[in-house]
Image 1 (tube, one colour):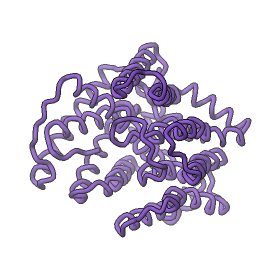
Image 2 (tube, rainbow, N blue to C red; image 1 turned 180 degrees about the vertical axis):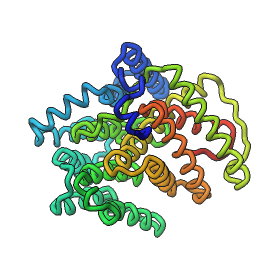
Image 3 (cartoon, rainbow, N blue to C red; image 1 turned 180 degrees about the horizontal axis):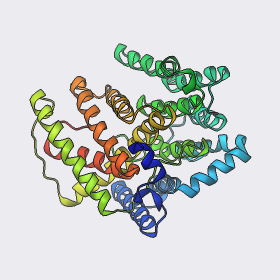
Image 4 (cartoon, rainbow, N blue to C red; image 1 turned 135 degrees about the vertical axis):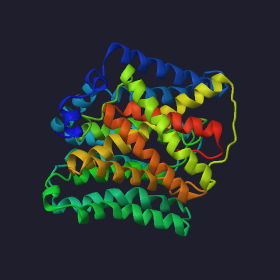
Length: 396
């Protein structure tokens, strides 16, 4: 019996008790720390206009941590089966505070509101009506949903350079490549609309399809970047794809040892390659302990954890369990996709791709060993954090 099947039939201890009391306590501590950090960064008395973004951030951060609990996902899945139309509209709730916040700052545009609504509604609608077997009628729905975040930014009269246009075209071809490269047997369990829903949300973030509306004072954490975290978990839940991701914050000795061993092995492999290529240049920085801790926490929650839920918890698991690829092939393919996702991060995108792909392999090894995306996210966050402290380049 393969290691993958053993992991599925006998889940790792980290996966068996995601709602353990300690797990809840850690979630609450993370939420309090994030809210306190945001309040401190506002640098204003917490009343009037300053209180509103703090409230929004607290709600979405809490929603992200709460929506990652298995019982909540099961309840959402049941509700989607009973009332699919109502649940497909649920992500539009995100627009209500956006409208208020935008009006307070005098920056609400009708075009932004319309495009944001489309980008929120389409993925949730097709995720709910998704069926495992591919049907011809799914093709048009899926492609429209994938194309939306790639072309709707053009309504804001944004200019797109040739390299960006090539990346968008390549991104659009992914669902078509999936159809072309899968067998008839695989198409019986393809979950094509689910794949298109995930791609749409991913592309909306990757290609900055939502309006740039700052909420958080950290790079890449505006209003929609924060709001889309619980929305993505919502899509996984209503489509019945949440089970198996395994998101538990409860630490175990086994989990810590797996994180440490993969972090060390990744450093042994990637640091010499990075130094040899010139991509990594030693440039040690020694921030204050509090600043370093804040950087690690925010990197874990806003960068590493969402990316691990996407690339390991969703894409790798889809390749392994839905398409039934051999585990080694699923690791390589998902890691290459992870590397390709970094092609829009200049400079030295070639070496960025290589090192990100290598990192993806070790993140996948961590996930396979624990079936818990929190552990692979821990390796991911530590890599980003240590790279930023020790070198002038960083894998993100």
